Image (cartoon, rainbow, N blue to C red; front, side, top):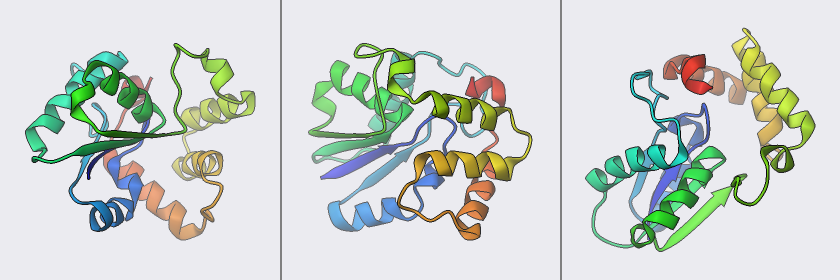
Length: 169
């Protein structure tokens, strides 16, 4: 089984770390796709889930080889994956979503703890990239120790990916 991997809002495919390589060794081909706007292209960035799905699907179709495919997606990437398999069920044999949700099942404030909403808003508004990345890691990682090395890597990725706040929001 080959896999497409999608990250969430404001996250780059580099945030997967060495996990894609482990997936490739265990399963087969892996395609990493970044959400539109994540690499600095801010013109004509789609804003609806369905538009993002169609945008990403074009990239997937241009890169994929024959064989069975699954999609592994986290957070906003999972919301896109759910839309994708709903509208294009022939594209994937398996879907795995992590920390994802859909507004057809619950309101956004029912899908996230109030403290998490506050933490996200506070981190997005922070000018201190290291503090921002640390608060995101603390919110999303409960098994990985947040060492200086892990935090340095997250800051380095952020500094390379050039997403602006307008695109983020």
